[in-house]
Image (cartoon, rainbow, N blue to C red):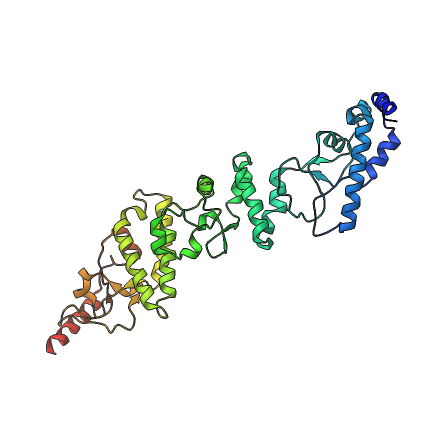
Amino acid sequence: NNNNNNSQQNSVLLTQNEFNILWLLPIWETYPSTEGNTNNEEKSTKKVTNLFSNIIRNLGGVDKSIPQGWTNVKQRPCKYKYIPFEIPTSFVIIGNTYIKKLTKTEQKLAQLVGIEPADETTFYLTNVFPKVSNMDTESRNSIFLSILNQYENFHPNLKQNLKNIQFISSLDGSLHRACDLYLPNVNEAWNLLDNDICFPSFPYALEKYKDILIGLGINQKIGVEGIITCAEIIHKNAFNHSDIAISLASELFRFIKQNKSIIIPSEQGVERAIALEKLKKLNDLLWIPVLTTSPDPLLPFLTVKQKLYSPLAVCQPKDMWLCSSQKHIMSGDFYDENLSTVFKWNIPFSASQLTEQLLSISHQWEK
């Protein structure tokens, strides 16, 4: 009888035994899982949960159904955690220990039986970030776009960890960290890098995510890392696709010549030292265009077997009369003290090198 039930709501209290029974029942509906519950068990749990909610509601709610003195009783250990924050409904959590979002009434009861709210940072570090590579595109985008939309509310530790996660898809569908990509408005990147893997794809390329991606370390200009990446692309294509490699090498040469003053920090310090050390990688790559014919009949000239060489194998045009018998001649010229040091172009020629050059010049004269 509804009237009788309504009149008794304020006076009904659960006994200790009844409370213990509720604690043991499978009344908590957990998120779908790849482990644990079968579909039938999940449906059964949901039914029990709904039944339990109705019982508590009819008793007048947690505050009126459980003696206040019990709230001070030591909480029992419980494997479950309830999630007080929003996550995509399609997200699958391994382990079946996270309870779906509870009403305020259910949260009160959950706390009484030892179920505590999940820590958001721990939840994402444990259940989301390690599983990125195994997610399908739709699920991954759903989860991480949800994270980006709530980014400003996240703990600094969570933001820091997000920098190291490969979750942003590029134009070819591969996954990258933000620091591996470039903003779409970096025009030099379109000219120097592989467009399929260096820009974020939709929807991460949307303007509303720009500031967040900047906070996660996305590149806003071509720096040392970009130059090295471009040189690696040139090196990879130096033989099988030489025309593409030479065209790209010319672009890189032009970029370095125009931006040499900003590529390496001018002030002495750690950043400058790191940049110079990284640029040494260029010495192992074929990316410098060279002259294919001698600019002067009397100039000794090495046979050119390829159109691109490493910096250690070439000399600048200003030095060609000193070493052209031992080094190939760059097809362009730029002077920069820092890069000359990295590429070892500032090392004085030895007496034996100069002697060999003079002998080669004399042979040319005799011809």
